[in-house]
Image 1 (cartoon, helix red, strand yellow):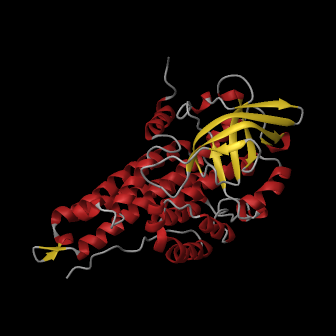
Image 2: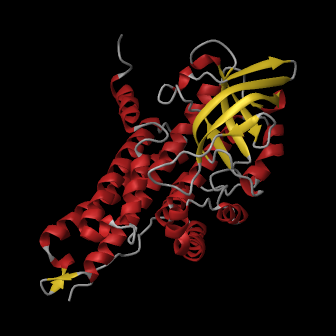
Length: 390
């Protein structure tokens, strides 16, 4: 009789330390995340205690410098940790990716004084971050944002509304992009805003198709005052900082997508091995075996693509085009794989008694966040053929 069912993911990791790290993550996932993931998502509960545990374990700091409490891990390793977390619960995996994105401005563009003051708490002090770029009227066209920061001496006053903010209303700090100059990309500056700043409030969370445990909300800035010491980078440098963060963030989304797809494949493998029709496991029928083979191939190809982009980043080489490709391919693959997983489970796949339908709902958002897949195609084409003529 053929041995059916999911097999552990075989990972190529660069060091013994990174192998131990993945073992730690898998143990934490099995103890703290997987057993309650379905129940917590259905109830829409945000796993704040899990994020505190991840922070205490060093898992919110992996790609950042050791001198500020970071894990000093290459992106090649960090992304595979994200994949494991997202496979267990996307709310957690994506939350870690968003937190990493929110830390990027201070870590990459902050002064030594800013890094020394803020990064220890952000990376290992139990704090949780959010990233504020999108607005109600500027999503894909982020350079047209309207939230304004006005300077008076050493104080900036922020007014406006940010939209689609993951961790909106629960984060301890926000990396905020606001307009300090004229129209367009060159008039934008980055700020680090405390979560409890007077004048900062969150709207009720959006009612989403999936990821119900992860709050996504509008943030309102009504005369929020921020000292100039919390301005990150130079005035007008904000959009450059934002794009730099998004290149890395897209790799995080790609890894999360492969995690969700892997979880869906594992569920489909387990189900088809145990479900018997016509006297044998349905996994023995060629039509279903071919679907499983295609799903596995999409996952392997996506994993290879995001890791290749990560290795370019780790080597200090340009990786923007490859990051867009990885985000595009991996999230499209996750959507296809999760839809096929529901199909393989038949009527059971359409019920909330099995996680396949949750994976399908979660995969959809990954094609949208941090640059829709239509935007990724524009980015890739611009690298290949240059900007469009007008």
